[in-house]
Length: 392
Ligand code: FAD
Ligand code: DHB
Image (cartoon, rainbow, N blue to C red):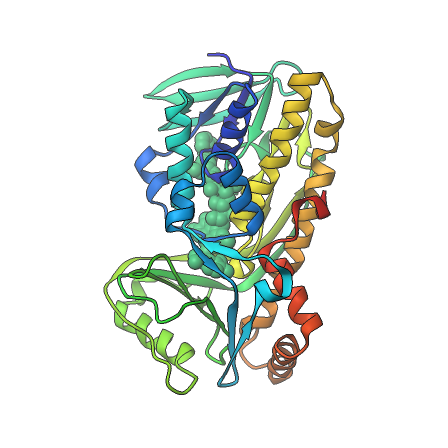
């Protein structure tokens, strides 16, 4: 099989890249090890920056997003028994939209298939070769080996994918932090008791109240990194959420059946550069952020917006400059998001079991960010996402 751009991974990065290339008249094949049903059901992130919403709308993917996405103009920070609103739109003129990652993935898959695009589900990329000349993606499908020949490979296969490992040793440099905690996330059939997201700093640990619809809540709890989900029956989850969120007078959580639950490890991770020869890496394949800043999916989309433009300039006009600067340009945004995600994580989580000094610093930071317009604006402009051109 032959195509112009071989894309490994049908997450937000790979699917959006395929869509953007199609709009420029460039062919691609997307290879995905999981089934279509699996990737469409996988519950992950839920917050779209303004720039991500704009990208989806301007490329014809805005119809359901405009109808079902929930625009939020602020977030709430809850700490020391108080609640404070950060008025993001008042401070920045921009907003976020709550729309589940799997909805973005469904919309992208539908658009690609409607346009006659090729997504090979249940097909694993086992190896990449000839990346310095005529790249080949080696596939395993229905128990058979196949080859996908292409001009360029886009490695969009997430943190556990194979693309990053195809770069020879010594070329890439890794920057990394691990955190002594994880997130337990639940999806519950309970009307959200909030209009805007609540990020709570509590002595028992961080909690986040988000939502997916007027009937469905999405909630997260800080837990130990080695926590076993089997030790978290639904009643324990609700009790812990109540303890950490019901800290202001007159506010209570709405409970309901838990539809899905899972534990996600937290890490910060960047690999540089994001390109080697004819392999271009994007999204979680090259960088991971802890989810506190809601940046993961947004960074994946921002990477491929840049890569799509660079490939269009190369195929259309023979220009190599944008491909050559892809890594450097993308990394500016990646590192801004790395800092913001680390900062939000450090401000909101219980970092060590007994560290009263750290707890006082967190309170001081939270109090400052909720009383200083300058500091609140810094949080808000990072949260809604800095305009894409400012970081290009
Ligand atoms: P992915 O979405 O990971 O897509 C990569 C795709 O490649 C996958 O479909 C995978 O099956 C496929 N693949 C992997 N290896 C191969 C192979 N060898 N061959 C073929 N296909 C392959 N971010 C937030 O902001 N908030 C959150 O609450 C949040 N929760 C998360 C929970 C979990 C469990 C995880 C893993 C991530 C979460 N994230 C969250 C991060 C966010 O979801 C990611 O940043 C986003 O999915 C990145 O998109 P991507 O396209 O780069 O990678
Ligand atoms: C959601 C996830 C996040 O990581 C976050 O910071 C806010 C909301 C969510 O899944 O809704």
